[in-house]
Length: 373
Image (cartoon, rainbow, N blue to C red; front, side, top):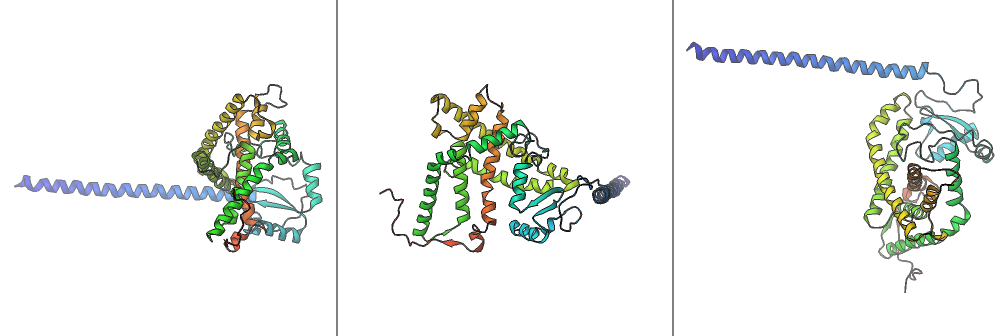
């Protein structure tokens, strides 16, 4: 009998000890979490106080800075900005003058609204304003220092600027790309006429964005972004991800002492976009190299910017020897610039149609000038 009684008693006693032990462990764990949170809050508070009161100014106070509107700690002049940036800038320049000093988060900026001042900055003092901040993602094709936008002022930056102006934006190149632009505009008008026949609602902003993307992609790499194939779908997905990522990185970079934390949060996404860009652009570069080998010498009017850069890349006597990574970064930035046309269309005065009300196409066109018949 005692054996059968003591067994459960010992079992219950052991369970009680185990329960009390778990309670003690939970209390200890809660204490550790509490102390950790207190330490973390103390660290953040110290960083905020240091950034506000004890941080040395990045710009010498002895310099005569342009006039500046009232600012707030940490965010600077961000509270003056509204969703329509051009209206916010116009209001600030009308109130404080054509040349303003702004601090957007941790970024010092100049707001220029005078044509004479802008000409002096971009022509007379171009070298003084060409400095670029060092990117924490040096190996990234889109955000690294090997791209044209983020590259430091030097031989590479001057070479790529000259190449961009002479081969992509020159009157000769614009004339050569006339056929491309006519084809893309014709495609857009065909789509509008088809929508009119069906009385469909049309997102003009999206169509104009597609027009800009397709034109730039065909001028740069002879590839359209709106085709219904796997390669075009990959291009669209990469552009969409990269455009969202650039916005996140700009936000993280404006956090001042906390920007390293923001970079760390988005580092995985940066690596994914970089890998996708690298694979896509490497495939396009190899296709262009194979085309150049098969046709020996491509006619000038059929050359795109990728063909021109590859010719410079393989030329041993070129003025500047570019690397493959620099070419990929250049095309990544150009592609992102075309995708960013949507921002200007949604915020511009003449392209704000989709923000007011959708446009419904009515079948008022009885004669189709683009009919093949």
